[in-house]
Image (spheres, rainbow, N blue to C red):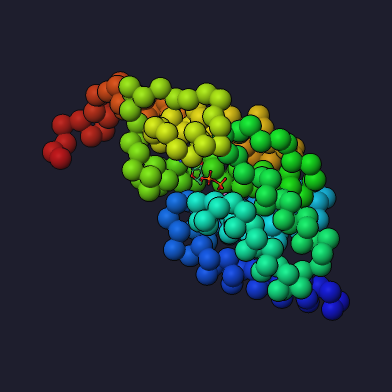
Length: 233
Ligand code: ADP
Ligand code: NI
C-alpha cells in the first residue's frame, strides 16, 4: 500500500518536473506529446504485460534528455539521473528507465533494437505519436521550426541516414515521411503497437495521395453537385 502511494507521488513529481522542463518547447516535444506518449505507453504496457510503473516513468521522462534540448545527449542523461536519484527512485527502476531513454530514439533508423519489454513499449508509444493525423501535424510543425519547406519536388529524399545527417542536412516535411514515418510500421516491437501503426500508416498514405493530387492540380472534380447547380454563391 505504502509502496503504491510512494510510486504515485514519484509519478506526480515527474509530471511536474517534465512540464516545467518541456513546457516552452515547439520542436515537437511539448508537454502534450509527453501526455500522449504516456497514455499510449500505459495502454501498450497493459496489453503486453509489461511493468506499468517503469513504462509510465520512462515515457514521462523520455524527452527531457533529448540532445536538441541539452548541451549534449550525455548532459541530458546526467540531468535525468540526478533528478531520479533526488526522488529516491529505486535503483533497479532508475537503471531500467535510464536504459530506456538512452536507447529508444530513432536517429536515422540504424540504432540497435531495444531489448527489454518496457523499452519496446515506450519506443512503440513514442513512434506512434510520430504517425497518423498527429504525426502529420508534428512533422509540419517541426519543419516550420527548422525553417524547412513543406515540399520541394527538386529535393530527393535521403536513404541510409546517420544520426548526424538525420538531424541536419537539407530535407522537407514531405521528405520526412520517406526518411522516417513510412518506415516505422515495419519496425514496431509489440503486436499491439504494430496494429495501431498500421492504421496510422494508412492515414498518412491517404494524406500523401491527396497532397500530390492537389500539388499537381488533379484532385477532385469540377462538376458542381446537382442539388446546388445554378444556386448563387
Ligand atoms: P521523438 O523524439 O518524439 O521520437 P524527434 O525528436 O525525432 O522525435 O522529432 C520530433 C517530431 O518531429 C516527430 O514527430 C518527428 O517525426 C518529427 N521530425 C523529426 N525530424 C523531422 C524533420 N527533419 N522534418 C519534419 N519532421 C521531423
Ligand atoms: Ni518523444
